[in-house]
Length: 311
Image (cartoon, rainbow, N blue to C red):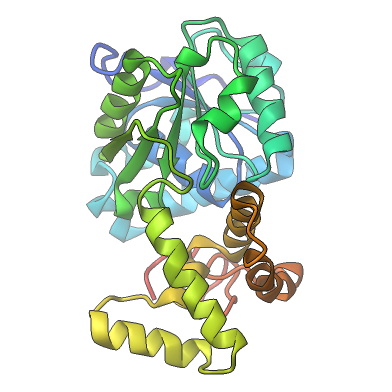
């Protein structure tokens, strides 16, 4: 789909994080934001997805995003016009460059899917190449068994919208080396993110662990008929002064991602209380009403796909 951008603008000097070229696996809602954040900050990104359609959609999103006036406040203005030039699109991992320093997977929140990606990355790249997961809820020790040389593996979890939240969880398993954690945290800083390095494993890290209680409570209030999403969000915004209530937050993240994360939480926690909450999301997900990115979720939005502003 594109020529190798190796000869385009120079990536950041590798001496800080030791990482200059990244392979991002997954062209979904979060994956494209991660790719954009790296490319906007001067890194060459190889973007892998088995679906060429998904990659083309991601490419169009990158072009559109780079042209939005507000992005000059988040991405270096002098690089906005060349973001696309720093991205190479791939449908097979065998086509990835030997120059890759980091493989970052951002695929569906299912162990079976992540296992395939991590095993393929381990087989394709030598020990020097770091491997990381953007998992929202799984702990690193649940996934590092799929990686050869697990000392090179950690989680590097982004929050959406990536350019605005500017927070990355760098979560370690007991087998993650300190060098790996340092490289990933330094890399986060190089793309304008603040890293929270977490050496004690916890599902959902810090923010997602806090958020789950809010979302659980909001869905339970709706299920009991106490209040509708509009009233629940109004109460939250009115008292806290925040721009978004719990249902607005879910719409912004994406109801498919919330559904996957809650399903992962039920798997990890072994707690049946998640199922009634998952069941509330299922009709919306089945109907393709995924929130802000599709124009409708719990609420309706005036614009179409690609609208990720606060509401």
